[in-house]
Length: 250
Image (cartoon, rainbow, N blue to C red; front, side):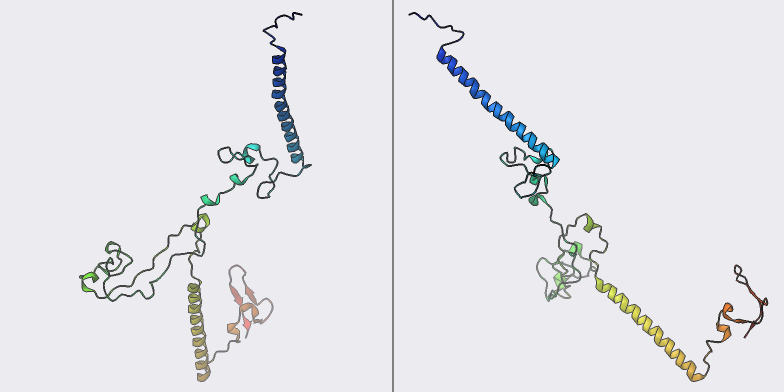
């Protein structure tokens, strides 16, 4: 029997079967993506409510579920395959500045065993020290420099380190303070106190030897309000004027 020519708009039955298969194959991934997105949103809501455990990054730290995705997700230009983390939001060790500690300070004094006996090449032409040049020399300009005389060579200074402090280190007024300086001050005051006590003891011994020791407990060495009054109403002390009237019994 003659079946007739197939309609070109619908195509052959084989083509129709292939088209249906293509439609199904395209719709399945979309449906799967929608299901995954829905499950992901439900899990996020459960985490925000505290019904599900929080997500953990590669270091084992919990990620706050209330943090937005654009913060917890690693940028694509860094590594798009990484899982959500906050490591890229934290300070990176390779980009951190290395500051000096609070105990570091500039060196004082001169170098030990740095006294030279002859002029060295590259040293200061004025004093002969190797740690600075002539334009930076702090000594009095000599009539004939150490470069030409080779005598009286100045010792070398300390090579100062390059210190870089943070905000607190720059404003620490006690940074670099030597506690031994305070010990010197305490010893100086102790000597003055000891000298005063010695002088007072010597003066007391001299008065005892001469017999002119004053009676400290005599009435004239006592305050007026501690004296024995001669009678009621005969002695008056003004509280404001600090005046005294009347007599007292010695």
